[in-house]
Amino acid sequence: MGKPVTPRRLADNEAKAVARMLRISPQKLNLVAGLIRGKKVSSALADLTFSRKRIAKDVKKTLESAIANAENNHDLDVDDLVVAEAFVGKALVMKRWEPRARGRVGRIQKPFSNLTIVVRQVEETA
Image 1 (cartoon, helix red, strand yellow):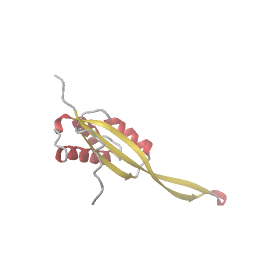
Image 2 (cartoon, one colour):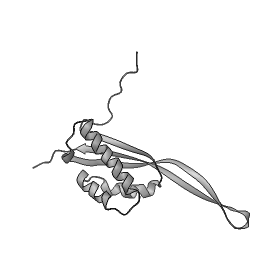
Image 3 (cartoon, one colour):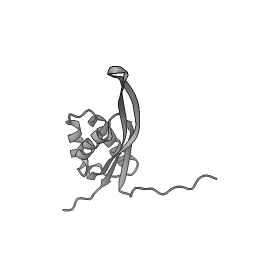
């Protein structure tokens, strides 16, 4: 006897992908996530491709994973997908130190972030 099956948390027309432990601060990652929120998937991919931010490559990878999940796991049409949600969360912070003058110490914090992208199929109204 196994565990009872939990119901799906997303709607039937949604799919998501999660990237964990990205080596960037949540504040910087949220700037890139804000670029794609609410856009059509093709437009969001184009924006990430030509973005000059270093983390845009990882965000694009996660978006492509969400698109693949929508297509393969949930039989959604790729042309009608919109980035419904793109939100950022905090992960761990590595703490390092750097020697400073007079025997003191300077703290260096190296934060990590989590990124969740939810894509939704929207029928176009004509």
